[in-house]
Length: 296
Image 1 (tube, helix red, strand yellow):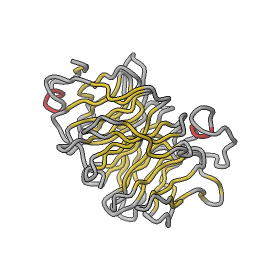
Image 2: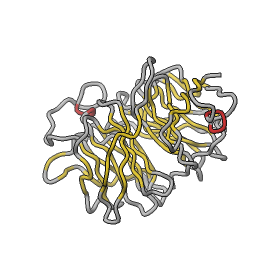
Image 3: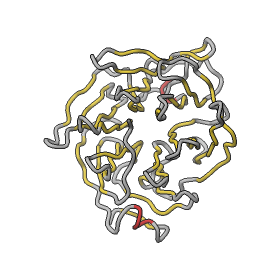
């Protein structure tokens, strides 16, 4: 069993046994996996390789989707099934249209270039939320250059890029983010500070609160990065050992152990009960009891 149980509730959420299988390897650093439930494929990023790849479940084939990719990191789908991506090399958020063309949605805030948009989600109204740490201005994972902004923020904007707002600017390095199932709560983790914060979303779209909700702990490699909830509001966050699973009451139920350090993950397959992990040089999968949520 490739798991560390910390609470008896873990087996009901994940399963009595957890087996992690490798689907592919030989990449430089994988990130941003997204499952398209209609076309049945998984797309993921390889930032240092400046490459986006696509895995097909029937054949197991991993093929090139886009190269160069402007060192894309996090990805999501909007309500129409169009891919939205965070690009490190251009400090931008983009959308891939049905014909394959790319539309730029955001590059600047109040006249200054964004740091390097990192992770991204879209709510049921089509509003986009993304984090903006500085990792994409560092060697290997981006293009080394000075920052124009003096903070690392969390943003939201309409699906067409209008009404760009900074929702919070008091992070060390904001990274993974996710919404509760009812979309009234936003969770954002901070890689520098090694914790997860919880915000209430007000009627006007602003954030309230922001207290520390939980902290992934352990003595194995890993830190807060990718983060999502399943259909029962259990929250999953990368951390020491792999992916740590938290109940809605913030108790850590256990850890899905992955052989390489996990940067991100997503649910997929026809029943949405598989978790796909982008972990350093490889792509992994495990089965779980509790389904995830479709991205659109």
